[in-house]
Image (cartoon, rainbow, N blue to C red; front, top):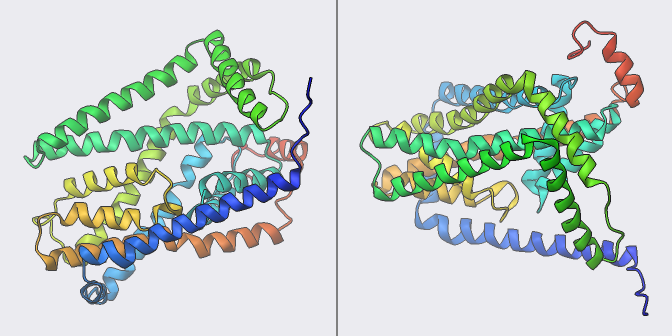
Length: 371
């Protein structure tokens, strides 16, 4: 029997870096293609800049305030899915992870890793962070799948929905219903959760076997415990989590809508229902990680969807609004995230062990936002 030699960790690390460089090169190529070739076909950069400069200072300030609210609107959802997480901690971790997601290939996974690292230094168990990430991710995906359906229904009411959009709505309803049913099945009973966990463990073990690593074990029992934790969290907080998630998504939409109105695109030219539909569908498309934070993909998709069939002047205004919207929601979080990361690196007053944090929270009145 031949025993295969284990893979050198240095070789694995080198392969990982090579894959990252390849992802980065492909992402950069996609961004260059979009902004250098495709975007100029739907808008004129010179006219776009004129539309941006035509905004008054009052319009700029009001848009900036709405964008700031949008950034902060996500933090209550984070504290909702993670009892004991302070709002300030949610802000720092979220801004830092968003900066990573918006700049690095595969940044979403790296952003989760950064969140785990930061919260662990504050005495928050990894299991709590993982539970919050799963529940928050599920609720975000439910809203992402549900918003296009709502938007298409609104378009149908106003007479703007065609046959193609109706088919898309039916597909969306089917996907959303399937996702909800799958989640309900997972929570249905401990034995079913154990079978799902065991199946996932078998699949992961098979992949690890190819990589010449030891198989995983005990995933059935972990799935049981995880199911119990999810039920315990949702039993008392599902309304708060749902409302906070909806407010966060609609706040992001509001930034786009106000940007369109401030550059001069009226409701007669592009109705708010059409804006919501375009916003919702482009967000689904940008979930495919072609570029960090959907850079280029979102800008092109929104400009093309909103400007379809409109005069060139209106298309340029739409492009201006989209670029302002993306500047406020994609670019601004990057320097704020860098500052948050540096704050975490230098600030020691928040650092605690798990036991010290539990004692600290137990000494507060409500256990959610100690001074």
